[in-house]
Length: 219
Image (cartoon, rainbow, N blue to C red):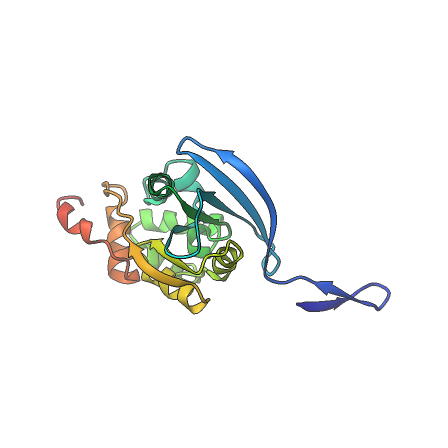
């Protein structure tokens, strides 16, 4: 914990890290969850973990879902994010327990909503998702998973079965002290609108997407 100087010259504590703020029941179309709300004192973001059932401490089925307004809320087919979120929520209910950590501040792999839309406009002109970010002078992936690890630690989780196709998520969790006992693929059938985006994620961002080989006919 760091300290800051108050208006009278006295030192007052300034919190760092993630703090649990609230725990509320959240019935959804997928099943019953607990919405555990957190404040990330380092970035100022409000975060939430959706917890289903008695999760235990080891091998907890877990999804770290990066915020995607266009996919999660609007049903965009530019990406597979909305379908991945729905599939993850269904999976933890089918499992009987699990966690979906919804990571705000991760829009557009961390570049923000407006920058993401600018990148999408460039993609419509022929650039891929990596080239578009770089053309805007932005990082290809600016996400930080430290807050996700902090949330899992607060929930008492030592190891997870991670629903992800992105090896960087596994590496990031392990760097922050969360063991990844297994990586569980979360593969969504592609469509004409997102096949180029998904192929770029596989070829340039090392996502594990073997199911794309079966849809070579999509342009």
